[in-house]
Length: 208
Image (cartoon, rainbow, N blue to C red; front, side, top):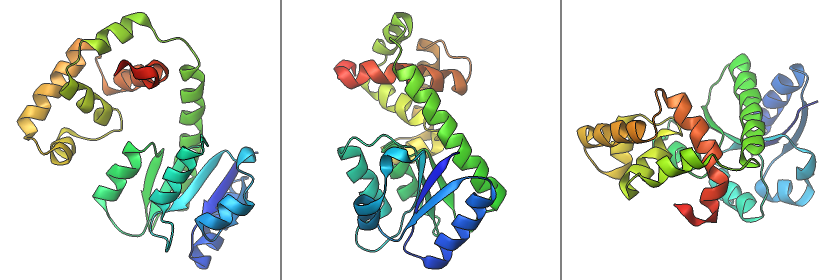
C-alpha cells in the first residue's frame, strides 16, 4: 500500500487530502508543520510527500531543502493556493516531483501523486545503472549555457519560461534548445528526459 505523508497547516485541507487519498486506497499520515513531520514522521516508511508551499515558520520550500540536506530521497509533490510561477520553478529546480495548484480535482491529485511515485522509482532504478558512455559523451559536447537549458528543459519548462528564468530572449533559447536536441540526438523531449535520468548519477560526481 502506498503511504503518503501530508504536511499542511490548514486542518480542513489536511482532512480533505486524507479523505481523497485514503479513498483511493492509500495510507495517509498528516502533519500540521515541518517540525511535526521531522519530529514524529516515519519518513523511512513513506513513498511520497505532499507538502503545502505557504506554511508559517518553515515553508514548504524550506522543508524540501531540509530533507535534501538530510539525504532523504523521497518524491515531493507541492500544493499551493496561489498561482506563483517563481515558486513553482524554484520547487521543480530543487527536485520537486510536481506542483499542484489549489483548488484541485481529487482524481487529478491521485493521478499526479501516483505518477510522482512511479517516476521516482524509475529514477532510482536508472540512477543505479552505469551511465551510457555514448549519452555521456554527447552531454559533454554541450556548452555551459546549453547544459543549463538542458536542465530546465527536462523539468518540462517551455522555451518562453526558460527565457524568463535566464533573462534571455525567446529566440536565443530556441536556438539553444535546438542545439541541445541535435547534440543529444533526441527526437522528442521524452527522450531527453530519459537521458537526463541516466546521467544524474555520474553528473553528481562532477562531470558537469
